[in-house]
Amino acid sequence: MHAPSLPDRSIEAYATVTDSGRLERLKSLAETLADVRVLHVSSTATGGGVAELLHSLVPVCNDLAIDTDWFVMDATDDFFEVTKAIHNGLQGSGSRLTEEMKATYRTVTEENAAELEDEYDVVVIHDPQPLGMIDLLEETMPNAAIVWRCHVDLTEPSDEYLAFVSEYTKRVDHAVFSRSVYTERIDVPTASAVYPSIDPVTEKNRSLDEETIAAERDRLDPLSFDAPLVSQVSRFDPWKDQFGTLEAFRRAREEIPTLQLALVGGMAGDDPEGLELYERVARETADDPDVHVLTDLPDTTVNVLQRQADVVVQKSLREGFGLVVSEALWKRTPVVGSNVGGIPLQVEDGRNGYLVEPDDVASAADRVVTLLEDEDRRATFGANGREHVREHFLLPRQLVDLLELSVEVLNLEQ
Ligand code: UDP
Image (cartoon, rainbow, N blue to C red; front, side):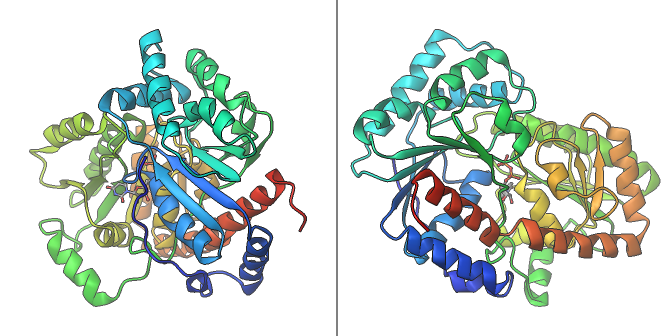
């Protein structure tokens, strides 16, 4: 296990984006939790929404004087092959789960659990990858409240994987899901839903001055910001359906010939499928000068692409929540998103974007064209999106929910 390096964060930085009542509530919850030690465990410090969330939540908790650590598992490629299969199985597809895969999972999770030296009052296990640590944690930290934070889309999990993961989830003290419908899909003793959030003060989400935007625009040449631009920002992962986005773009371009597409993606440290998919997408688009496949961009550049795109698309087939949707809406960019997982929590159809069925490429293309042809509608949707995110999906709101939950699982007096 290793502790990733974290940025400095001050709770006061959020005073401009949230009301003072919420900040006061956070400080009061932090007082209640003053003697509590919290540990977050996840399987990667880079790429993907969990890493994005923890890079902000953990330092803010420490700034509030809640003693909070984050450890990331150390593991080999075969472990991540197994855990990606588990992730895919929980999202409804994939190969058989063999005894050998289960053994790899148990060995690596146990080895990681054995490296934890300190005791904690609350241990938050993110996603299925570290869940197997429970076997040892039950012995080494018998008094800790174990919380499973599931970020996966549990719309239609495969039975085989559900049964395997349930062997662990039924032993946690509490489970937290990104949507209330998921709370009934898997065997857990008690559950609640907490919507994730974006951090408005990060380099990815903060406002940018004209000079920074201009410099980034130059860096992105030959992509042009003088012609219409659609972008999707997602890990290269079959669930994000980059090929579906490409197909929707090609159909939309029949109506708007100058249209460009930016497919922005990265490879998460715990996802072995990423590189292969990236190579397939890059090959498929190599001869198309209007499609820009961009990887491993700095956060400022992602910020500019989400901000300066005319429309952001998120054509996922499954999506636990989809932070990228709130990231785009916060920057006043309307989103055409699939009606799956956490996307409909964020995209209000006809108000800040459009929802389409995940396999409906033709409707995705139509909605993109509708928005591209109507600048006033884009501006109205953009303003609505900003307000929707301000109200529901910024960090202080999620933190209040999580701290209230910690107070509850520890049975503390408020
Ligand atoms: N991301 C990024 N660069 C990329 C691709 C993704 O910084 O090339 C970030 C993105 O901005 C977001 C996170 O990775 O903050 C993805 O989170 P999301 O919840 O959308 O999806 P996940 O990857 O967790 O399935």
